Every structure is written in C-alpha cells, then in structure tokens.
Length: 277
Ligand SMILES: NC(=O)c1ccc[n+]([C@@H]2O[C@H](COP(=O)([O-])OP(=O)(O)OC[C@H]3O[C@@H](n4cnc5c(N)ncnc54)[C@H](OP(=O)(O)O)[C@@H]3O)[C@@H](O)[C@H]2O)c1
View (cartoon, rainbow, N blue to C red):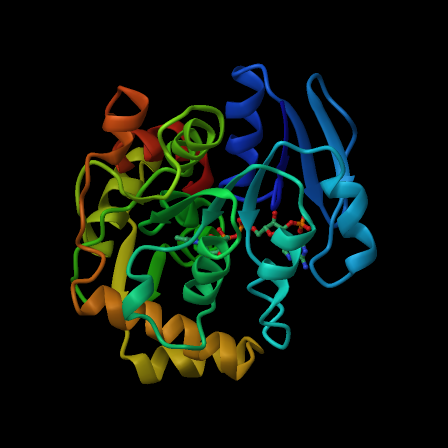
C-alpha cells in the first residue's frame, strides 16, 4: 500500500509519516520543498497552487491524507479537484473541531463537503487545538517574553498531541471500519491557557505567564505583524469559539482507536522542556 501524505513537513504530517512507516506502509511525503528519501519514505514535490505537481504525487497511491489548502482562499474547489484526480480508494481529511460553528472564511466545512461527495472511502478528523502550537507558533513569545498573550480568556481547551492525531489518521487509512466516520480527537483533559503556561514553565524551570487579550488588541497585533484581513478573521473566529466554550471538549477517541490513553500536555511539556528555556 502506498499513501500520499500532504503537509508531510507539518505538525500532523511529520508524525503521520512515522506512524505509517511503523505500520510498514510505503509513504509518499509531500512538501513544496521535499527533503531526501529515507527508509520507506519517498519525498515528492506537491503544491496546491501548482497543479502540474499533482499528477506525479497522486500516481499509484492507495490512500491519501489531506492537509488542505488553507492559504489558497481564491480557489475554493481545490480539495474536490484533487480528489477527482486521485485514484486512491481511501481518504482521510484533517478538519477541525467545531467546524460547524466557525465563520465561512474558514474553509474546512467546504473541504468536508468535498470529501463526503468524493465517492471515496473517507474519514474526517476533527482535532482540538494542537499541543504542538506551544512549541512552534507560540514558542518565540514564550521563550523571549516569558509570556503568551491571546484572546482565549480563561476558557478550557482539550489540547491534543499531534502524534495522537496522526495515529488515529494512520488507523483510519490502513484499518477497516472507519469509512464514513467523523472522529473528534482531543487530549485527555481540558486546560486554560493560563494552566498551560504554568505547566510549560514548570517543565522549563522558569516562570511563564499568560495575558488574556481582547479580540481588538489581538487583531491589532496581527495587523502589526503584517497578517492579511482574511487570516485575521479566521484567527478571531477560532478564538471566539474558544471563549464560547466550543473547545472545552474531551473525547476518548484516541483510546478507542489506538488502545492507549491520549498524551497529556504535561508529558508534551516534559519532552520539549528546552523549547521554552
Ligand atoms: N494548529 C492547530 O491547533 C490545529 C487544530 C486543528 C486543526 N488544524 C488544522 O490543521 C491544518 C494544518 O495547520 P497547521 O497550522 O498545524 O500547519 P502544519 O500542518 O504544521 O503546516 C502546514 C503544512 O502544509 C504544507 N503547505 C503549506 N502550503 C502549502 C501549499 N501551497 N501546497 C502544499 N502544501 C502546503 C506545509 O508544507 P511545506 O511548507 O513543506 O510545503 C506544511 O507541511 C489546518 O488545516 C488547520 O486548520 C490545526
């Protein structure tokens, strides 16, 4: 079996490649800048914005893991077009928890509709916010300012480790019984951002703080950082849903599907403690 992993350099794509290789699956790992081949992994160039890269990436695959084209707002049909071009029987789409409560500017609901209409054996993953955000997008602020400033109030979020998302995705692609399933995937507990910064600080051996911003302050920060209005609307919609309690969700999907408990934020913090020192 050959599986094409889109976004193979990303937060879920990297562990997805590993999870598939562990299962003995041949992986085609897609990136706009593919790296060198490794055992069981064939890198391939793939760019949503360059259709000439699609056919070589899709050739001969049995399964497809879709991290969608969120940076291509002017081409809403890309996921449907890719699925129509793919021979693969099985497809797993990375969507997001709360997809039905997010603003229309956020394209995951349309991707889900394309996947459902594809005629494939599909599964949809709706993960909660990733624990790995604290080691990537939010890491510089934590490391350099000792602080995280976000418009998340003191609302609870069931942060999930992307390795668990990947293991659910790998099961959905390689085992039977997942066709037509929508998996809501979370960590084992819901935490506030204030609690998260305390946990990261304890792991890193320093004080880390959290400041609750207003939406207005956050939008101003994003504009100063040069973000476009669409991505600002997107971010504000996601944080609104956090404040509304839409991400205070904890499910047992990881345990049901992998047979072991979901990884905790505390263990993620311990494993990555040097990131915030
Ligand atoms: N972050 C969260 O907390 C969270 C929670 C739930 C759901 N999600 C969903 O997860 C998805 C991924 O988001 P993320 O922020 O975590 O990003 P990510 O997966 O860490 O990184 C984005 C990936 O997309 C690839 N990519 C970017 N532009 C591309 C293009 N034009 N063509 C092909 N590949 C491209 C990048 O690969 P190269 O740069 O190597 O090409 C990279 O591997 C999004 O749909 C998001 O809504 C995120």
